Length: 322
Image (cartoon, rainbow, N blue to C red):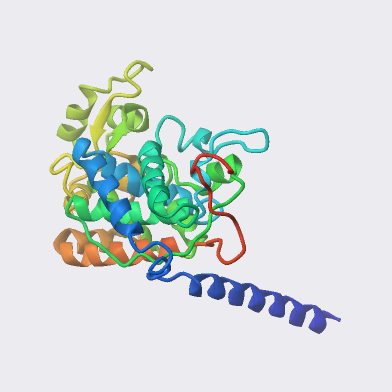
């Protein structure tokens, strides 16, 4: 009996693996070559225009793709607004008043709909936007696999349990990424996207005001000027995640960590005597290795549980199931 149960479990596991491989195999960089040949150039134009108007938007778009893929897979569920049957992921703790760039994705979708209505998914637009954003600010580029479809559901609860938090310790971060099929090295590489973008005071107030062990004193003093202790005032005041080159995609983020100048606690734990110290050190010395690993990790992340074939839909509007 036990043997039969074991065999049955093994068969189920194998079927799930085959299903995952099949879904990924259906993604292709040439998916829209015949049905919407101008899709990528249309998306690129919108993304470049948005970042030219606001440099910070590059980081926001990369983060949006990440926060999408970690909840239900890369299915554009993060874009859905509240509806009678939907509790939006936008209201999850990690996204509320923090995730941004939705209007840029909506604009890209509207432009694509003009040239080929009902063909390109919002999930694919998110993936392409992240790549185009990275490239525009000096980061790596990569070939985006396409063919994802959009979900008809969202999950605020999964967002709150699956997405990292700025207070996470290293074992928690490693576990969250491993649960999505990403290694500790992938996690460190993807964290390197914090070489651009900004964070709100509420996310680093405790670190710069109450930490004396793993933060540079001068760095903490600088950050306290715009983020004082003991008050909720100024919660939304912004500070660059990379103090040195906040608008350029480079490896200074990792150099900062070596000197205890990580803005978020979840940044600094990557270099604080743990198992990822050697990876941070390597990336601080070799920007080309970091960029190569970042691109590879983004491709892996884009493969997380896509809806393909007859699963899901192609939304007409990214924020609603229509």
